[in-house]
Length: 377
Figure 1 (cartoon, one colour):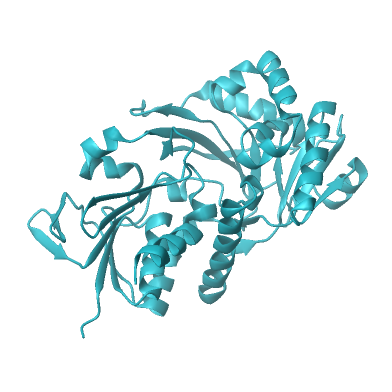
Figure 2 (tube, helix red, strand yellow):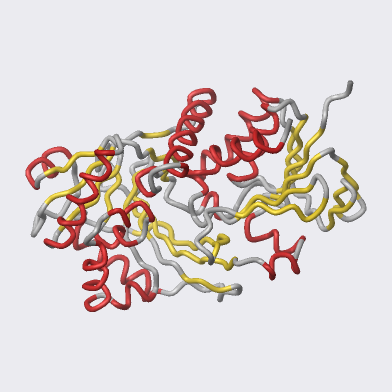
């Protein structure tokens, strides 16, 4: 009996995760990517594997499972990662109240979190603004990778350990009857997964238009390291992040905090700004971000939004010289109906897996494993 075949369209994180899951189910997998390498949202992010942002239950477990897989892959082929956890900081009483409520809720659900006072924070971590600091919530589950490195190396792992094949610089323009067309080339497979992010609109424009889905453009920046071997020691987040992640809705007083932000920082909420800092293996500081929702965006980044991010950043982070070395934007699909992902069946043996809404690094490996295990014998 011949081995079943699978083709995955897209070599971003969702496509790579799906290729892994299919291979482990016994399929001979080929990944087809339109570019020479992945250049989309999967490399244009913080590199945060971020369980703290996922609500208890399925999504939190999925995030933890994804982290386990990331570590397995990284250890196998020497991808850098840093299990530094995360630190959410409070500079106002209402922020501290939310953090205390989250600590209680998360602890009851056996998440590894702890509340830290100002002295503990300033002793253990660097780059934190001490002025007005009340405290912080530390979680040990978060891990940082460098997405630019990791997304390029995961295909090496899939090829070496799982026998996955890759075809680059090839754009699929049509899928029908278990066949994929790329110009004059035709590919065939027993099962097809389309994991091309916002590009799935190109293959299935009418289907895309019918979905409760939009696109999100985020702007980010990267700064030179403070000095050689200088490390923050964790990923740090300002109070605005408390109203961004679903898991933080567990705090009863969150609505009061959001009301104050609406009154005092409306321009930040209008532009979906919350501010976080991660540090990569080079010591560089990745900072962001903004969230603009539409189906079509101007190609130009907005300097005023980056300035808002920087102004808020400096309220909780202190670096002697914020030396900007890179700025960019990314675009990813986002569900508008609060769904956490999109799984469609446009034709027999054809699946579309999409719509993780900026949580690809955190959830993709776990989601792909669950999805493939549930539908593929």
